[in-house]
Image 1 (cartoon, one colour):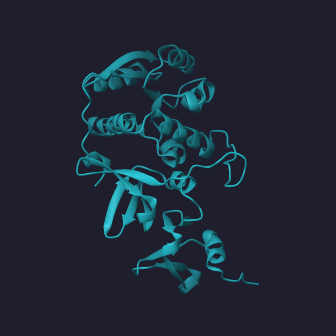
Image 2: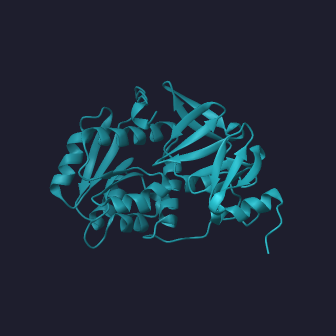
Length: 285
C-alpha cells in the first residue's frame, strides 16, 4: 500500500482553509498549480510569486500554510529562498523541479515531497494529500524539522553538525511512528518494530508479520531513532539491535545479518565494523 491508496482526512468543519502560495518563474507553471489547487476543497490561493525575491517577501507578509516552490529560478532559486527565510520559519513546502536529480539528491533525503515537471493530476493530488495530512495530523513543526534536515544533507545547502547524545542540547528520539491503515492513524511503538527497509521514497516498517508503508527517508529515520536500540546496517536497512541473532559471512566477503525469527538482511561493508563492535567481535588485524 502506498500513500496514493490512503484516504484523505476529512477537513473538520469550522477550520480555516489551507492558505497556499505558488512560486514559479514560469507563468504557465503557476497557472498549472493554481488550476489544480482550486480543484481541492478547503484551500485558498493567497498569492503567487515569479522569482525568489518576491517569494521571500510574500512568505513574510502573507504567512501561507503551504507553498509550492520552484527550485530552478534565476538569481535566487528555491533553496536560496529557504535559506533566506530560515528553514525553522518556512511554511510546509512542496518543491517543484524540472530535474529529477535534484529530487533524488536533495529532497528524498529529508522525506519532503516534490513534483517533477511535467507532473500529472494524480501525482499532484498525491503530494497535496500528503501535505494536507501532515498539516492535520502532525502540524508544520515536523515539516520544518524535515526541511532543516534537507538543507543539512543536501549538497546544495549548509551542513551543520547534528547534536550527539550526551552533548549539549538533548536529542529527542522517536518513541512511536504514526502510520495510516484502513483509514485510521495508528501509532506504532518503535519497540515493536523488527526492522525497517527502504522502498524508493518510502520506508517499510516490519512489525511481526505486518508491514506499514510511510513516506520517510532512511537518513531521517536513522537520525531520529535511538542508536542504542537501532542501527543502520545497510543504506536500505535499519534493524532493532535486540533482535539481532547472528552475523553470517558469505562468498566474496559479503555479510548477512540474521534476525530472531530467521529473516536475513544484507550488511554493507562500510557499516560492518560498527555492527561487529556492537556484537563484541574483536577487530581484525
